[in-house]
Image (cartoon, rainbow, N blue to C red; front, top):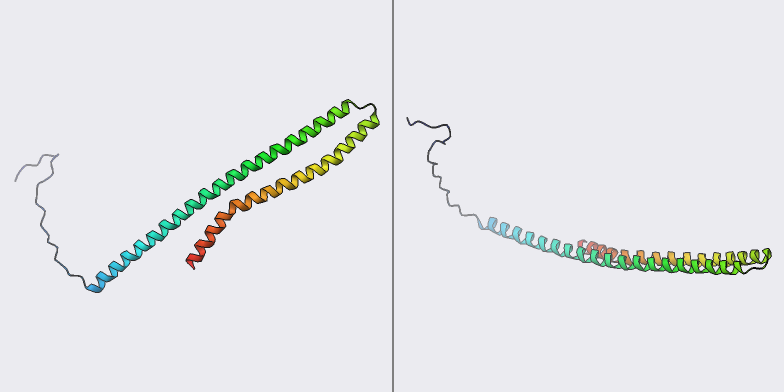
Length: 151
C-alpha cells in the first residue's frame, strides 16, 4: 500500500459512464418546439410592454416637469403682483393727508385684493388641475391599451 501524505488526495480513476442514445418521439419534440416558440413570444410581449412603460414614464416625467415649472412661474408672477399692489398701497398711505383717507385707501385695497387673490387662487387651482390631468394622461392611456391587449 502506498503511503498518502496528509495533504494529497488519493488518486483513482472515475468510471466511464456512457449515455445511451435515446430517440425522443416526434410528439415530445413538437411539444418542446411549441413551448420554446411560446416562450419567445412571451418574451417579445414582455419586452414590448417594458418599452411602452419606459416611454410612458419618460413622457409623464417630461409633462410633469414642464407643468411644475409653469406652476412655479405662475406662483412667482402672482406673488410679484401682490407685492407690487402692497407697495403701491404703502406709497398711497404715505401720501395720505388724514386718518379717514388712510381707512378709505386700506378698505379699498382690501376689497380689490380680496377679488384679486380669489381670482389668482382659482387660476392656480385650474392650472394645477391641468398639470395633473396632462401628467396622468399618458399613464391612463398606457394602462387602457395594456388592459385592452390583455382582454
